[in-house]
Length: 125
Image (cartoon, rainbow, N blue to C red):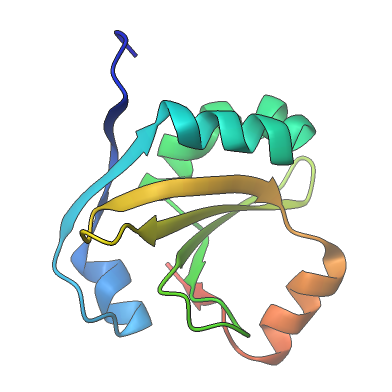
């Protein structure tokens, strides 16, 4: 971290842009101290278990999706961890200036997984 407020953690790539039909260009995904503090407070157990995997999830998700009920411009990177059968979601959102930041990491509930499958929202990466 080197006392930085934000740093690069991944890239929005052409494959994700194409799968989700995004009106965005390839660009850097950042994470900052405030984002990490939010994750620690909102999803502490999930952050402890999967926070170290955020970069890996962004680089090699099992699925990508958009939010199924809101049009909030978020990009969801989902990785299935087979050993625990956890679907772990990393949410990336643009700032008002258009920079992409990791906003959250958490395990998706079975009910939400079901709704994503029903809506055909998971796009296989």
